[in-house]
Length: 560
Image 1 (cartoon, one colour):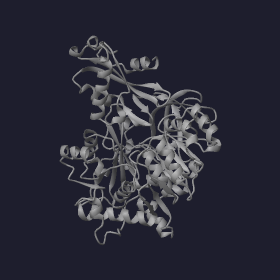
Image 2 (spheres, helix red, strand yellow):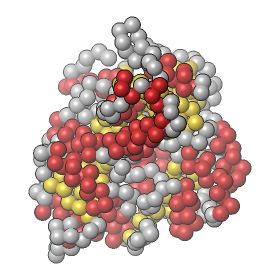
Image 3 (cartoon, helix red, strand yellow):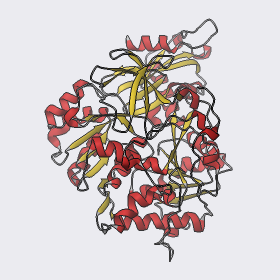
Image 4 (cartoon, helix red, strand yellow):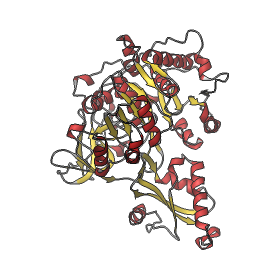
């Protein structure tokens, strides 16, 4: 992209942030994608606080008694949820010394307090940085350091790894836990007199309110920065024109709120229309089906893996309340689409989104879906297929997916911005084909990301974990095709001379070491990233310069 001075772009609105770190670390404006706001509903005012628009607005309209959150432990109306948000926002500002613009790490499963903490940060003018509950201390420390986070709110059940992360991060000044009722706990602080009301921060529509971290091909997470207006855009595009849900609906999702797919499914979409969300902490297919039957969910967000796993269990659960199903996180196969449709009568709405884009940007409503196709661009977005030089290719040609619209990539102080944004388009790293009817068909990932059961797993990160074991000399990690999970993490391992493969040929030798290495990875990084298959080899394929040839390993994995 030709360098353009930032002064050539319209200025951002005056920020409400006292701590200006987020705005200071946005990419140069010349590296931003083109943003398109064609629809009247996307013409947001200059001052917007998304927590007010998604929560307080319903109370102002007289709908405070409408159900907002449902869980096994408690249910909250919009009025009760708003009060919890206010109480946590007061804890942030009165007890922690928080000021607008501060980043706050959030850590917990999908439960009412986790969602309330998220919205409290937004309402107070902060920047939410939510993390997966399964992450280990090293993985928690990265966003703390990268985003210079001073405060964290954490479910007490995850205090062990959180405490280790805090010990390693002097910039993290205060961690407040909830759920144990201890002195100084979030619930104790929230109960203080005068905390039930909170005046929302007068944020700009283009103030950063979310930094969502995602792994790249190098395994190093990238922080994607989103504005207050972006949180409304997803409901006013995909929600309005594709999902088409109603205030009477009850949403349910297996994705954690730390994933933007989960954020949309359990918060942004339902709250934009005043609907309710069912929160579940255990997210196995059986747990999901039990919760659907118990709480009468009508809109389900989960990955293709879950839909496949639920098929043989349908006779055991009453899913008659469900009327809409959404799939993302990995490609939805034609076989899974048709099997679910035949068994339930529901056409699953496939979609592709990206953390960089916040949510789904290609996906069609049920009445225009095509089995095996991701769909057409969501109204408000444009998509095309380009070659390596960024030139658009004819229909029927496989190439790189490029997209633009009202949301787009803004990395936190990261040179990879120029790789993702090219010529004003977001280039997602997916290989696609567009047919003559403008339907998009997924072909493959064009990077080294492994997509397993809806989780994005960076192979190099798993390699680093394996290499920290004394028995491992070298390794290469790729994804292997798997009918149930889409892909599984597969590791090719060269052992140290002292643990040579020949010495493992004794009965049970390889099996014992395989489990030892798997357990080691689970203890080092998030357990879902562990290699489900480990293959011991004498050497790895490399270039003449000694660089690992992952494409050769992928060929081996496909041929297994």
